[in-house]
Image (cartoon, rainbow, N blue to C red; front, top):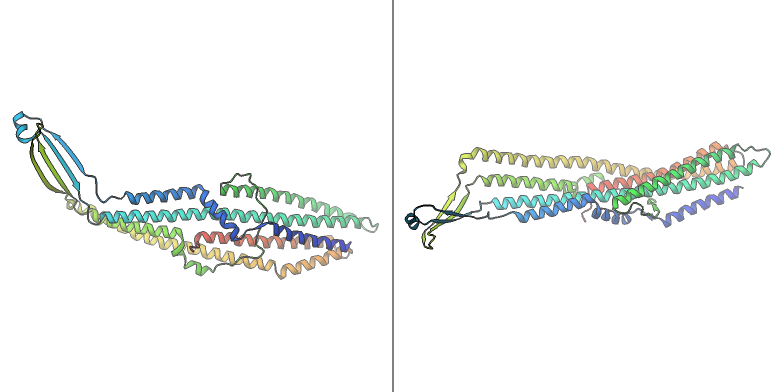
Length: 414
């Protein structure tokens, strides 16, 4: 009976390794195509991309020359007066560009285009990270189901042993009945885990824009935690690679261009004008050429107020950038710490702690079969092993999830 038990234990370990080999591991190589697919198909990412395209069109819409104005006037008077002065008057007026105004408007539009491009990058990263985190959660669900299935098979083996022991007149059937009860409870937990897995699978399909009923293969988390970036090193990269910060920098540049626009708008506007008079009989009576100019000095205070307001918005935008950098730095440090802690916990749960617990459980199995240990001690030891294995998998998933959030804040620009 003792030999039979250890053969079964070895079979479970081998089966576990086989399942891991057949499943797909949620490494970066597996997750990268999912991120790209979610970025292409997510409505928010598409909307942000269209906004970036519209902003690019706005750059081309900035004009150097305003539209010319054409005028037509007809005179109503005595024939002699119309013959002398002409009864048809034509005019053409062309405003001239104000110095530096076109460049300032073009600079503002181009800064907004770059900001919208960074906003599109943010939407793309968020969509990709959401899909990757769903895949990680699905892998954790598969790991939980696998461990729960192994737990049930172990419980069935123990129940068989208990029933064989109950055939001995000196033994009771209490252990067998308790194991049957524990087995029924574990089977209900497994069914619940399978329903949860189905829900996560549907959520992942929704993130990717796929049919909800599409089946996913068995996924597996990495056996060991991947490297964790150093938080302080990632903080130094925020100002260079974080798309939200880059977008706000571009909006600060747009605010600076708005200040230049306000300064250029207070300059006098000059227009060239041509007028001609002719008689309806076909003769040209006169032609004139002139220059028109508005007088902005009467509204000097209004123009200056607009310039001052633009300068204040420019300074405010610069401080907003600094505030967002600090906010994101706080998040980066927290995520890097969470990832490092999860990795450390994962290694601890799969090291000496697990090895010693496993050795103790095997000893208790032998002792229980020979009636030298109680079933309660055996079940408690087995639950500890199960808990350690499941927690180790959860910490791997927690680290991967934290790394996905970190990737959104400090993306790889290579």
